[in-house]
Length: 376
Image (tube, rainbow, N blue to C red):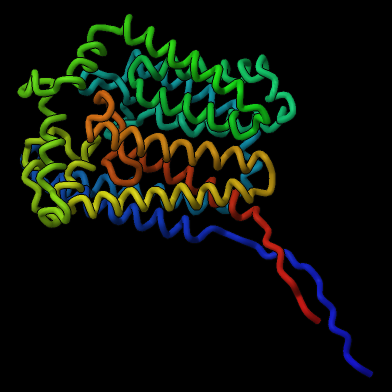
């Protein structure tokens, strides 16, 4: 009696380990660059060249633990906590306006004993979870313009509060919201209308901007007019980029980090990367971020349901917008505003919440089921 071959479909569990290893590599690279950039400044200010590296490594370790734990939790559970997370983030962002620690003219941190917490980072993650949960409940209604406006109005309170102290973060939150609704909407024409309104609104802000923001715009246009004060950081960052050449001066060999680029370990770390590793190193960093965005796009396209797609789309928008804004600021393409380079710039709160978002994306990837064949 001949044996009959039977072919059946089986479900193969999947997890995007490519994304995981990309994030770990970016973190490792970020720690190396952070030490190279910050050691001199930390030694001068605190007599401890490892101060920034130690704090960032601790935040990265906590973030990695959070990423692994969140990746193993069914992401559907977060839909029930979206509203609570949004309200908590809004309350904390309001609290910052009254009791926040001030730095460089802005109050962005809440003091927690020896540590500081930046609620605007929680606001980004909370907005992703909250808005994804709202939109996935009304996917067929989001195509109606009035419903779209109602959904967008939900993020206006946190946008306004965050914008008071940190306009760049508020822009990221609004960008995340637009991408999430865009992915769910079957009609794209309404986003063109929103874009026109946004450009008009931006023009009004430009015309009636507060004095300090208008000054910032003028310095962006002509930083050489005030090379000692407001234009100093921008010019020094451009000098760093220009002096790096094609392959850079070598790791640790930057001159601009020796007090010329203020707070180089924060927003301007990309300029030191350009100086030490050159154009080649800068392109490699950009390619790494493009790979991360590509993996997030793959997860979003193959997610098991709309909620997973929206979550990962929001995370992808967050990473993409923040990288674009940071590099644009460093190269003086847009006015200077405080925005960090994900996984690389110094910032414990930012790194921890970014890694939590990556855990959420990995959780969505675990929900993907690949089709395989089983022969008997």
